[in-house]
Image 1 (cartoon, rainbow, N blue to C red):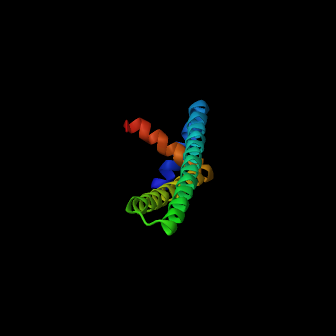
Image 2: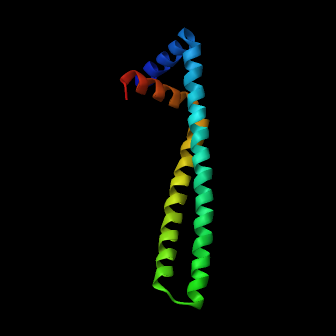
Image 3: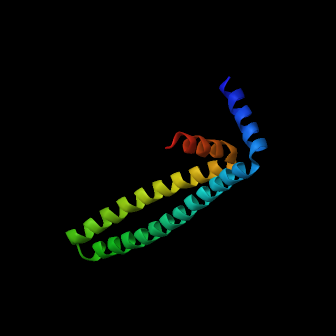
Amino acid sequence: MNQDLLSQLLQFVKEASPVIWSVYVRQVYLTATAELTWMAALVTICLVLDRICRKAKKYLKEHYDEDWTVVVWVSTAGLVVCALIAFGLVISALMKFGNPDYYAIKFMLASVAGT
């Protein structure tokens, strides 16, 4: 029953106000593109952290220093966190590109509900 109501709502919005519907769909694509941009920035940060980690490990092989051990741990932790967030952003963006109607309805209901 909910599927029928959502289908009817979707059809009504598309027919009654195609301009509003196209704005919501465009917003979905812009949100997905922004997520991909953030993902690219996080991948860049991951690459920088990987380079720092490799240099710190190389330095640790030659000279043991606790400060450099901390650098290795912090850069590795940052790399893992950034990689996980980037992976989540890619999945979210692909879902929005794959089913923009669902997210347009979601945006519409959120704006109507005021959240």
